Picture 1 (cartoon, one colour):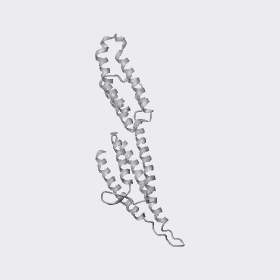
Picture 2 (picture 1 turned 135 degrees about the horizontal axis):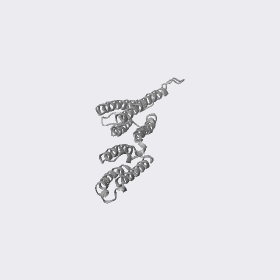
Picture 3 (picture 1 turned 90 degrees about the vertical axis):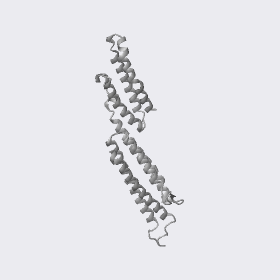
Picture 4 (picture 1 turned 30 degrees about the horizontal axis):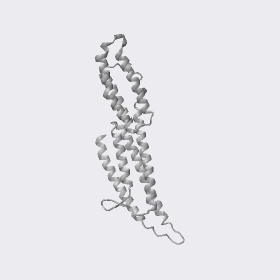
Length: 242
């Protein structure tokens, strides 16, 4: 668990440095430069550990913790009176902000992947209509789309908010908006396609609308209304947060 590893290092690393400063330095010759030697050794191995984590395709929460950890590291070392010259090269070669970019891209990738899978299943259910649509607690027809989509959106937005960076949150929300508009357009087009299949004139006249289409159109409409409410709720939650 990379997060536990990072948290665990904090529990002993700074304490050990203070022990070297307060107790060990006076027990060895001054030309040993024991504090400098110790800090540089710690820094070198911390950097190697962080680079190993960064190249292991870590989860989004790990990237976020690493970014925060590096900021805390610099603050703590400064408070311990450690010269910046001893902490060279910087952790991750000074590219720790790239962790946030990777974090955003990972969230966006998840949103896109989950949306493709969700829309594939929901489209299949809408077009095949093997049974009646789901019925919610109010007795209204609905699809699984709205519930799953907004659960996913809220989870990813919460992750972005945890970064403490408004730019990250704005980018994830922006990507979410594009996905939602895309699915809305998909549903509108699908509904028109399904309608056209059964209303196109032919020699025998227009075939009857198949059983179930009206029910699924109502279910889809109810899902769009739920989505509109969910969007308003998210806006109300995020605006003060930003």
